[in-house]
Image (tube, rainbow, N blue to C red):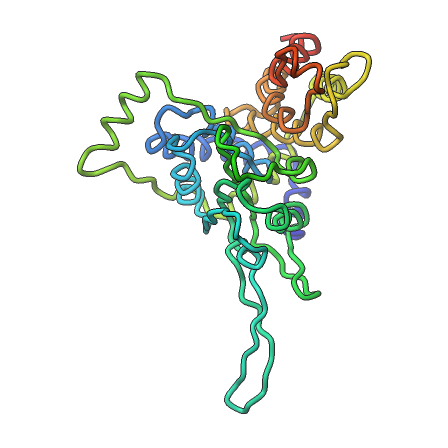
Amino acid sequence: MPTNQRDRLAALSPEEALSRADSAAQDLADVSAQIKNVIIGQDQVIDQSLITLLAGGHGLLVGLPGLAKTLLVRTLGTVLGLDENRVQFTPDLLPADILGSEVLEEDADGKRAFRFVHGPIFTQLLMADEINRASPRTQSALLQAMQEGFVTVAGKIHSSPQPFHVLATQNPIEQEGTYPLPEAQLDRFLLQIDVDYPERDAEKDMLIATTQLKETAAKAVLTPEKLIEMQGLVRLLPIGDEVVEAILDVVRAARPGPEQPDLMWGPGPRAGQALMLTTRARALLQGRLAPGLEDVAALAPSVLRHRMALNYMARADGKTVDTVIDTLIDAHIRL
């Protein structure tokens, strides 16, 4: 967030902040309605994608082909007023194909100089399609931009646009010829959003809506500047001690130790930060001005599942990360 806008938000009185948050909640209701007119039967995926952007983070969409992941990202870009690019990750993709490169140019006077040609990463909303099909070297080209908001090419810093978000996709079943994302990069994703098949009634509505002569088109509701302001308002929402303690209990209990002998590794403090931000964003999205325990319980699986791994014995016994997380939520969050 730009420093001047951060300072303006910090200077707001509690009454002004409350009024702006209330107005933002109304705008977000319009955003959600616009997206759900186009994307049918994926309400939870839409909500978690919006939560990711409201919290100022990046999301990892995991789902089979044909479940509208690409359409979702394109629709988000339209409704939120963001510039968006899509990169299809393949084994032969190079870091320069994402970041850009310097080219040598000669002017009319014969003077030569290098000029940086920006790659597709210089956009406000980047879709990294099938990110695990690229080599680790290319995957890591995203790391600096995702965490720091700039990239370094030939010793020079090039800042990312504001806001800047990455929504990456993965196919959970076709693993031949893929490169699993390293833990360091997985941790940069605020949420892992699982995209499942729609319910029967929703799929029926989708079939009818998408096979007519004219399909529903999304309209812009926000601007990048308005989204940045909302991201600041999310950080202003009050959060009670009970919610903070629940976040700490769940995150700390998800680490290897006597309580969790089945885990090989678990979430670090960044997971707690992600859960703090996303619970606030979920509350604002639903028109509430403070998060509750139900927000922690709803978002803990998406925050934790890509930050945990079971050991060999647990996998051999048929256990899954999701069942471990469900047990943690039941044990530490009293709804």
